Length: 261
Image (cartoon, rainbow, N blue to C red):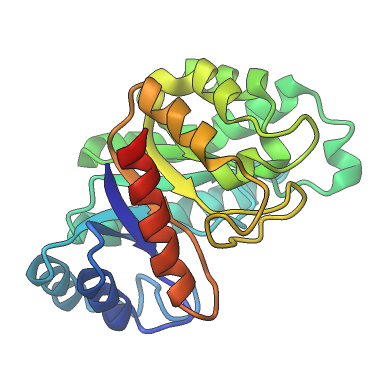
């Protein structure tokens, strides 16, 4: 396992990179989004040099709240342009895999009436806009499960249409909604496409990004499922507690659980 953590885009990126290196993380899960970590404000040479000097790896992460699946083609195209602009930055930083969130921008009253075919079509049109450029640059596009679009059949449909896309499992997201934690169900369906994992805790209702053990997720069971797959690649702690001691405690908990199982 390679263990990393995600920078807080409200903090200075240089300080976040140094924090990752000083606290024994293997890589930084770099999210490029406003207000303080955007492609336009980045000194790419400086950041690339700092990551290399700190002997860190890098995984790319993009904003989750863009209208990827909008009913308006213009908004889907704008979302695609933002992702491709971010891809340009990550290419300069020598990043090999980047997350896009399998999320929805549709309001609830429309989402309730939307068929699986409609959602799959909207998402397919968006992915057709961006995937060729990812492939041209040799960068892996990853789709991350999000709470509002976790229907297994819908996920299967999208992954069956786009063989070049990797699966990013967010265990915190998989714990949200009816039916309990869906980690094993998702791994059964898409484990052969898994290339990245996010970890944070919650109580099954909201995406709280709590420290490991602060919510109701059964971490021993989730890690056991990963190791049985088997999976042994990048795992990001996506924890945004005000006190960073909770991030470090989470780091130690996950490393111990991983070693014990």
